[in-house]
Image (tube, rainbow, N blue to C red; front, side, top):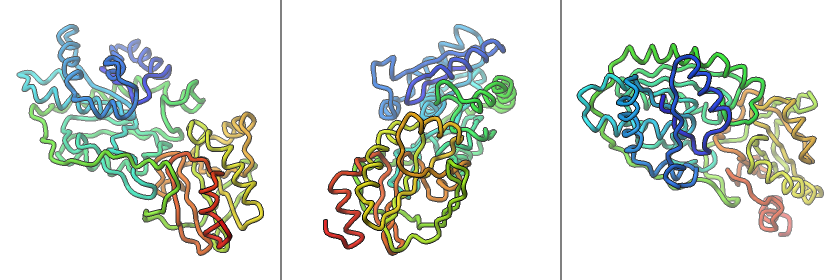
Length: 372
């Protein structure tokens, strides 16, 4: 298994699973290509790779071991694997049987993060892939809402795509040390991967790649300031439990300005903006203003532990299965919606900002007709 690093690099959980796979007879090579090329970790570096290094590694690994090869990656590491496999196909190997396909973990393949409330476009490699693929997709991932669309694009050329959903967690690898749920799902993974490899081997790998026909914009949709909302989402009834175990219901957003903030404790920008949200709530205390904080798919115990370390001056609601965030088309964190007194979403931001900035407060008060 040639396992390529995601945009944030390898973490200890990657190495733990790699060791378990090796103990079970699957040799694993971990490769962080951007780092090896002295490029910074990140999605931009991954998008710049042309796949030639991966193609070289596929040949080298087979020539030196005589083993069959599978490429692998999680998050944007999946893009590295798929682009490399396609480049390898372009070399017209006489014997293509030793590359059996790809195993991906919660693959990210967005061309960019779209503006808040809009759906993403995928990188061209998704539509230009025709190799056998196995995917382990965590249901707590922010991209799970778009998983069906990803599968449709991967399968459009008749390629076999096997999938298995991994419930209750955001990622198998991201949090370090792993949570109890992460460890529980990781333990049986070597045997599952072994069975997946057997399934992939049952399909021939096409010798010719699919042409890359589409070209999409990779301009970032990440916001750096509060801007007018252009998405298709409309406010909907909120009925969620808070961290104290009480059921909280919001049915009417009229008559006040409502800020709805989706966040998670594992998200550094989310944590970074909490103090400014605390200050905003204090500065808007004399106005008709509601701050609704919704945590994305984390255990209440983890949130409670976090709130002992980080001061949070507002109630936190629990979107325990991530379904509510998916209904709002949230795919990045933090994401925040501003609803005006008529119940219409007026502003949004899919990044962390300084919420007590005078310009932000002026925009919020202008929705109430108050002096700037």
